[in-house]
Length: 397
Image (cartoon, rainbow, N blue to C red; front, side, top):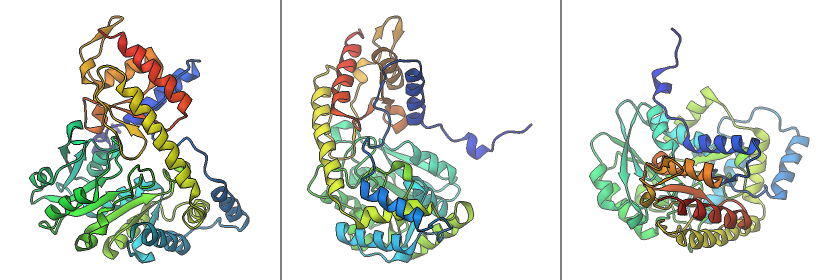
């Protein structure tokens, strides 16, 4: 009997895409659904980036690119890392990928083997543990709750490290919580990691440009760890280019070469026109990035205020990304209309069907007491959505 592989059977479907699909189905039936489940900016790609893509088409950038990406784009990434992060990388240490997801997969598939452990602070992005499983590794979760702003402590990190630990995945600013590690907090983690030289640090910085602090802090800034850090980033969030599918990794030479070798066998170089658009994003004017960041900060302030006005929700103040991640466990066990909310997934479905607002239950992110809400939509939609959420939750008793 034909069947899928054990590897695929072990993977869990994406809860974020599942909820977005259910939202779309209701919309198709004529229901006015406000979608707070999707993690992508609602802005259009800036005009100068689109113009660069049009020019690339006219200039016949329609052939295969080098596997790690055009040299001009890799140079632009190096210049960005130097200008914005104070980090020195050479173009041969950069691998351009089909989105940040592929960059992460490249790294994990290149270094993780059967039984290797990968530490993942929880709450986490839904794909991290599935990527580790795909590489035949074992996810090891370290939970940090809302009382510690969803950030792992050095003590928690050290307690999770074993002789089988191969890597740590760190995401700051975080999806799903919006939490941001300060420089001092990162230094605390590095002091632990310095004791374990065989542990690779994978730093997912895709939300770098969406932060509400003085500056973005990368764990790669600590020189004594530089040869063990992989920075993963891309243009999706900061430049409103999710559909262009351009990510990249900056890594020690041995690992960049390994990722290029792997990519050469299963996707080769990513879209040539999109690469030229990404190059324009990094080398062109940056005012658009700040304008979007300011809009997200305004929305952050709005949704935190609206969410805190709803009895029973515990809400921290995220310092980056475009999500809030309230603890909603006070509603578990409550009922309305013959249905009982047993967990966050039930609550998300209740809010979709009763309030017509799409969110994602926290169990998919390793935090079953919470629910993720994206504020990557208009202020008007946010005010309307939280009014609906408040009304729907008030019915539960």
